[in-house]
Image (cartoon, rainbow, N blue to C red; front, side, top):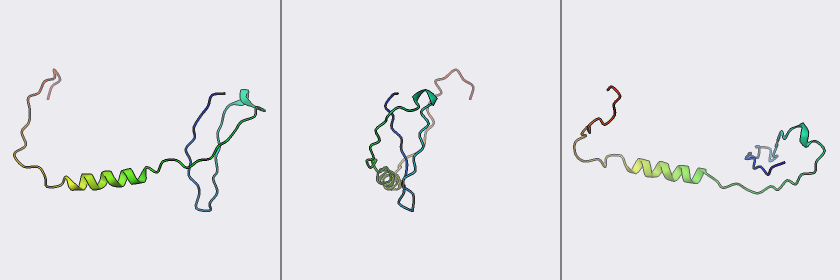
Length: 74
């Protein structure tokens, strides 16, 4: 059996439910489960949103379409 990482979320009731199908060939083998908090991605997503909002209105100049360098039709 290979080592695996499973990401899950604790429910509103404070209980973590995890179901990991590993296959019949791994039946009756001992395993070790370690629970640790995962990195919270929500902070980086909100920081990205703030950065993206800060770009609004910053473009100055004209939009110019560059030359088409592909053999594909336009």
